[in-house]
Image (cartoon, rainbow over all chains, first blue to last red; front, side, top):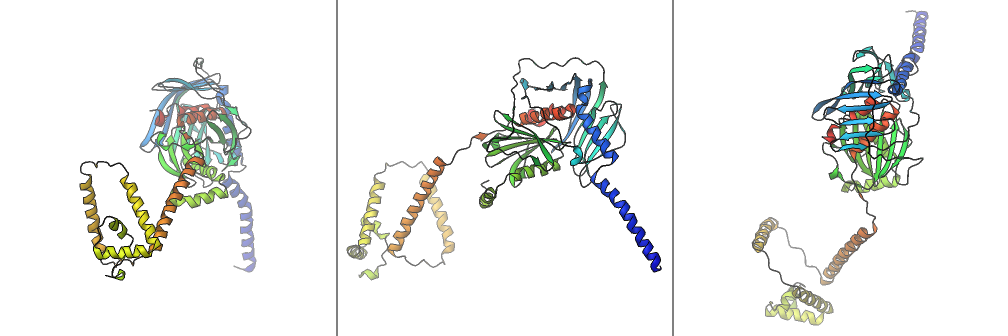
Length: 338
Length: 164
């Protein structure tokens, strides 16, 4: 190859790299492509679709446990923005928009009324979003919105109804691609008359007070591993924080005192959170982690994949460690006095 | 027999009070007591301690207690035979032993004081039992307000691990 030709080849390669680099970089970051914007639009649309349409059907909930995969079929109906979900054994939940009621063996109980959440973060800030191949769920055409981690492994697949924007299915995936939890309609009728959903009578519902800041002794970082603090509220026995990264949500309930490990529900497994002992539960609605640090008991619930929850909780637990506290841990650690 | 022929140690004072020493040893101890105010003070302490113990009410040991004690001591003696080759420690002087004993009592007293202060002064935290089921339900309710209600609330319905 002559020097002139060699120079031309080098220049051509440089030009190709210059053109390809931004494309590759944009793709890797999930960036600002038209497809990513469309995927983000579908996610935002899906948040409020249930308020605009009445529907009824059956849904299948599936989740992985230590003893294998479990399933549950549920009756779902939505009327005028109120949702009722009933399990085969009679367990039920009703959400009328402001209050949420649970029905179990002992009858109805009412959850506290939560302050309305503020604006959620843009899901593309933390996730790479893309639309996947067309799908059909419960006989309805749907678009799959895939959220991927930085390492390109999928974290969630959302099946969004093309006609209405309703979420027809949701799969949360672990880092190796297996489905950790899923909810998927098996049958659904949209627009057909649905009987009104009435809240149970005589059920006490308290009100959680919205807080602008948390009282002394509680910890409420504004941002944790991509999650933004959406609301904080005062409950009779603690403080509840609600975080979102635009795609997944995490609740953190803080109570002052000493954790009574023996009184925790059975079925959990022992693990570590930021070098602190923790009890973990894998539930159909998400991962639950309970731990204690510096005189505060934390109960964390998240619908994110387990690895994402672990990172978020590690950051949350480590975020409030002062130098003095770290030194105390260092000194007392060998004696097991955590 | 001269005092030097007897290796006098404070433990002999208890036997001295019980009149269990042979004549020559008893003479040596009395000679030491006459010459040493420290030995006399030690004798007074031993005598006071014995009287205090005698003042305690007597209790009847349960059946088989002493059999178990002797069995345990015998086992300990057997184990100590393994250390028979170890040379005995050199005798310690009386002032050094008394200092060590006082230091031990001081350490015990300090530990008790510290323990009492810790129990009284350190604030007690109340025991917390998180209502995990309620927090999970609360999360579903809050999440349904912030996003799709079905996928947030449907898993709350089964709540298999806690409710069943």
